[in-house]
Image (cartoon, rainbow, N blue to C red):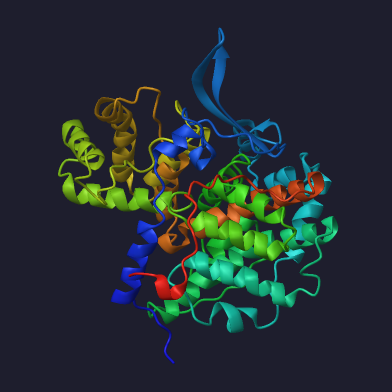
Length: 454
């Protein structure tokens, strides 16, 4: 029997029945003070847990008044700006060092860092024939699904898969951190070959190289890259590594971990969360929005013409007609996203090296104009700024990463944060996370089958 992959009229009819009997009166959310999206009416998140892994600051108290300020992001109490300046000034890659910090709560010494790098490299291998039997089989057009399938299949190769003792979970997490770049790139190469008909390249990682260097090495047919390309990819990975315990995928990790399930299931759940375009796919939306903008704006330096396009976006008259300027604004930050600020200087230099100065000028112009347009059209004056997604997709495109790998690169970074949150949940709590839902359906009497009317 063939797999049913079409929506039939019968299914459409049943869907309408489901919709008709599942609509909840929106006024009830206000009546019962339900925090939709676990956020209050002012957009503040409901306090659902405690964490030492990372912190976001976007407001400060001024004379007793909550006032927006320049955004700050801290990893284990250390300002990310200071952290990145530290390894960049010493011309070192930061991914492995920051991984150590997030997992173990302290910066490594030189010897500890070297030992940890060697440990990660020793984990940089997949089971025999895994690439052939798993990654190459039934390649998906979405790399996040490929990544999820690979993670769940690794469960079958682990004789201690269900052991959630802390040392075993740490072993599993370190292994996943080490192999995520391979799973992501190999998944794309399989898709590129079997679905798009391109040449197939499977390059083994070089155990002398950093995570960022290996990603570029494995992705490119000639294995070549510049040191600056690797440096900016490394910075992107560090900036996407963690973002407070309340982001959707990290919260998912806490929720699923609290049930006592295995590491592979918990990380697959987080991947499913990150795949959603409201979470991990935003930078693809930014790149596609700019592609549409460049087709419809004739003079990229004309502020009036660019502003009119931005207004058309907000009025649902341009691009995907969702009424959004992608890459602008954030659920937490208002005045600035520190990650975008850290990115920007490197983006300009990379654009010059890649001959894409005009693209960079357009991005900069939109960054300048969008807050004004949003304030005028939406009457939002609390402050709207570019977020990290505004520039990350542009960076990835200049690094010649295909769009199919944008979100997997996010996952390759965020697996570190997920691992830290999984360990934190296992160490500190022994309760399943189970929020309350209020039933608002009126009670009904059971009707025998022969008495029911259509």
